Picture (spheres, rainbow, N blue to C red):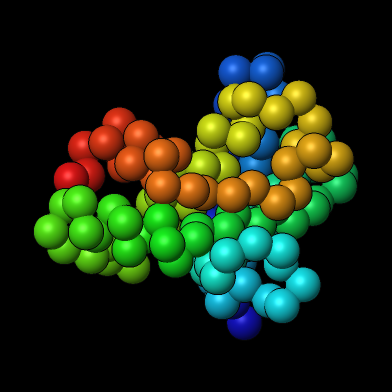
Length: 120
C-alpha cells in the first residue's frame, strides 16, 4: 500500500490547495505537443472533489536548459520544476479544476522557475 503525503499550498487567488504527487511518465500519445515527461499531481481545493493536474516538461526545454548550463537536470530538479509550475498555476489560475488541468513547462518558464529556486 502506497502512503502519500498530503501537502498544502495557499495560492495568491485565496484558495488553499491540498495536493500530492502521483508519479511521472512519458507523455501519452494523446498529449498534443512536443515530446515531454508528464508529472501528475492529485489536487483539491475544497476537500470534496479531487482532480488530476498534469505538468508537461518538454524534452526540448530540459535539453536547452542543460546546454545553457553545461549539465543536465537531475530527476529531483525536474520534479522541483514541475512542482514549481504547479504552484505557479495555483497562483495564477482562477479555477484550477476547469482551466488548469494540463500545464506546460517550456524553456523560458523552466529557466525562470529554476533560477528563482537557486538552481543553476
